[in-house]
Length: 323
Image (cartoon, rainbow, N blue to C red; front, side):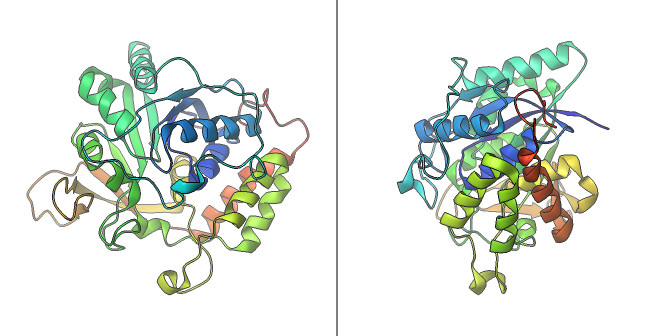
């Protein structure tokens, strides 16, 4: 079994909560820590949410690092539910996990350098605006040698956007950071809306989370409170859990299909945040990313539910090291 050494760079966020809990329940994933960025909500709230999620998992060995408070260049924008701030204690209980004093960017740099020195590499799962990652790569280009790949949830090619008509939120929130990461030379895997819209979770799926103890009940509360369905767009009941696809790809890449392409981001003007993929070599530029285009819906849904349900097992917790 391949065990990936992973930093999860996130802006929790409901989807992020599912992805983080999935990773922490998976023996295939060695979560080195969380690097947290402002995005869905301001940084103080994304950090608090991250601490709550780690607390639910029982994994007090996993540090939470606060990072960038805003994007590199553009004016700050927040997610659809920004007004709610941190997760209400009635949905996700307050715990005793606190953030590390080490800044998220320094954590990324240190972890990548330590891996490279040991002849190893880390994987970064980027499920929020990529500000922290861009800062690490721009300020310390040598760290790229310690990063095996960046598996990112972001972008939209044929599906168009969900935050604006042309842009997916993680890219829209910091397009300059995304463009810097795409041009860094680090191998990139992209989970765009085109693919995440193919796997829709219904209320019946959310009910199955409840077998996952306190962590599963918290996810049930979150997804039941913040409706993700859009029959007008999807044509059927249910909604996507975008961010968890990054973790699922590391665990079960056979559930996905993708294509190589040169990918870039529009960083100025009205369509700031628009992502484009040159699948047919029209720009005469070598591919810089693998764009995931298809997902086995039933397989992905079953995998996420199975990992969440692990939290309901007796003895699963801080000493389980992911399962």
